[in-house]
Length: 309
Image 1 (cartoon, one colour):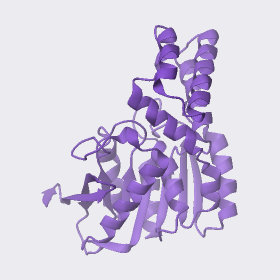
Image 2 (tube, helix red, strand yellow):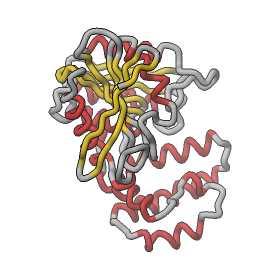
Image 3 (tube, rainbow, N blue to C red):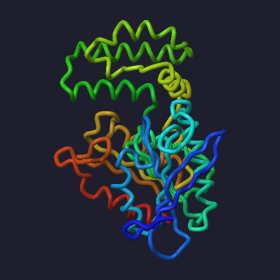
Image 4 (cartoon, helix red, strand yellow):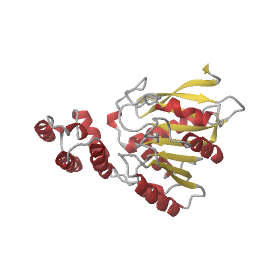
């Protein structure tokens, strides 16, 4: 265990489905055992620090005496395996194993465990909240209220439009993504789609619809075929839930997400739920003018979590 700027840091590893997942538990100074929040990354390869994003957010929890834990995705950092072998259900199962490992730690209060997830990690927060895990709270940061297929199409269209691509290119990219979705739904092999990829990979829009290799295609198929329904998960929430959106997010329909999440959470009947949209926030709730976090965002995270525990 090490001490950095008054915060205790401890390495924790746990086994899941034949792989070893490793992460860092950060403990605030003060009386123990502590409440803790599991921080979950968005899409793509990511270590426990999520390329520097998590260290900026941890103090919001630690300063309110809430410990934090995050772990390297499979095949990232010091974790074994390959993150592309697991869809949302697999990632949620890994997070559940992490929660069990946290509850076994002498520094942690097993009855005061919460989760926070960014983007795809927001989907995980919804999923975990719908499971009977006795969580103290769940926070979804830009967690879509729409499923994978619709989010892929929405993110492509609005990202390309924000980058000033032509309307014909936007239509071509969306049409190609739709073809990929149909192929994924019928569980097509990579050999079936590779000629389609080769025919368009020189197009200016291809980066928005890229399939890198067979492992990437395997991961895409998993996500599409799971057919995850965020609103059903929210309607089945078992714990306090906070949904946060940035109004200037080009990957997720923020205002629609806020409205749909509010209705689903009301249906769930959980005692404490809230939805917040930051008008100047982007996908990571950064102010699009300053580049820093939207005013009040970090305080909202820390204060809301502290009230639940």
